[in-house]
Amino acid sequence: MLDLNALKKKIKKDHALALALWKTGNADARIFATMVADPQALDAATVEKWARESNFRALTDYVGGIAGASPDALSLAKQWAKSKDPKLRRTAGGIVVSRLRDGAEVPAPLLRSMLEDIEKRIHAEENWTRYSMMYGLIAIGSYEPSLTADAIAAARRIGKVEFDPGETACKMPDPVPYIHKTVAHLKKRGKAK
Image (cartoon, rainbow, N blue to C red; front, side, top):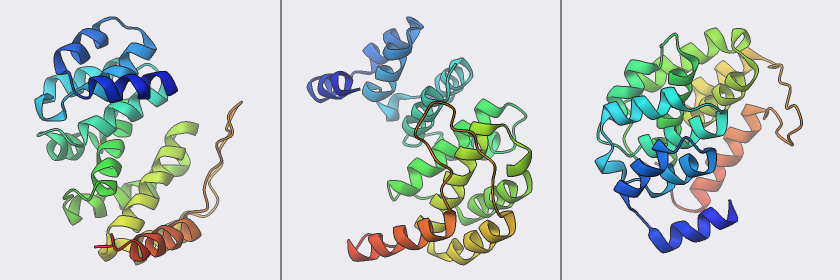
C-alpha cells in the first residue's frame, strides 16, 4: 500500500489507466485502479462491473469508496442497498459511508432505510458483511446529526454482534461510544453539519 500510495501521488488521476489496470484481474492492479480512476468518469455500468468482479472484501470497499463520488452514486446505492447480492449491498454501504465521510449529500430517507435494514439483518449476515454494516451504522450516526439518536437507539437494540476477525487485527467496534467520539471530534474540528 505504501508503494501504491506513493505512485498515486505521482499519477493523481488517469481514468484510461484505471480501466486498463482493472482488466488485468490482478488484485493490486485493481486496488490501484480505484485509486487513480476519475470518479466523474465512472458510469453506472463500470461501477457495477467492478462491484460484481471484486473478489475480496477490501477491493469491494475500495470500489464503494470511489463509486461514492461518481455521478450515479446515489441511484446505485438506493438500487443496491436491498440487493440479494452481498457484494452489491456492501458496495452500496461503501458508497454511502464515503459520501457521508466526504460531506457529500445523502438523502435522509435513504439513510433511514439503510439504518432500518442494518438493524433488521445484521445478525443474519455473513461475518465481514456484519462488520461493514456496523461501520455503516456508525457512519450514519456520526455524520448525519438528524439520525444520531436513531443510530444509537438501533445500536442498543442490536446489541452484541458476533465477529470473527480471522488472522487480522480487526475488531467489531462498540458503536455507541464510537459515534459519540466521532461527533465530538467533528465538532471540535468544525466539520459537524
